[in-house]
Length: 323
Image (cartoon, rainbow, N blue to C red; front, top):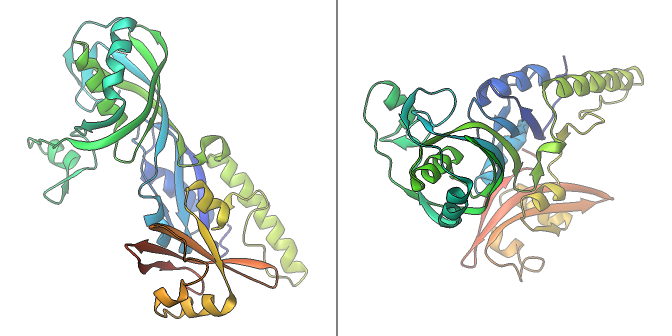
């Protein structure tokens, strides 16, 4: 079993029928570590991209909170379920709409909208998940909240099934979107299937499933064993880069800028020195936002920390180097 000290992120292809927690259990077992967490769950019925953080990279979870996401799904019109997905019980039926009616309704769901989350969701009410309250028989009323739908289109329509493609902000529920579109055209609906294809710049096509992960780790163990025989430090990362390092490419995929500092500044940061004086120079022109800080010495580039600037005030996000 591969148990090297690894740290980074993993693009994992979750299959339908398993929870995100269950999917991570498979990852933990394969990597032989409990230091694995995801940056945003997928419903059990859904499939697609699950972005997991491994080892020290778990501390970088705040960087992923605001990520936009892209989905492909199938909406079944004519029936609404209590969970708004195929696992729930049918609670309402209505006529199946025409394609013309659906197309005419879509513009009102594009852009900045107010959306009511599903009651079967992880949204908290009084410190408890709404889904847990509903399953106990309690009535839950969730407030609408602002989300953004950057793209919404019908790819194909074979009544009662509509294949849709959605690009949305954090906090948007595709199940709610299906429900609300149906109500706008005098129908009812639920999601028959959902597949997450993108998180920020991270793509599903670059992800590995459980089988691909196992194959890569087996390969890594072989490489590490060969290294040991040569009295070398075991290779900590798969040759196939299943566990991606925290590097400038990661920040680029998050659409976050990076800066490079010298060794003296990097060491001062790892010791928690006051940040503002250290940011002078390379960071003078930076607008408000989050930045990755790297140091390059002797031809080796190392991630040091992520920092945040707000109203000309600097603060540490997390110091990664030396942790």
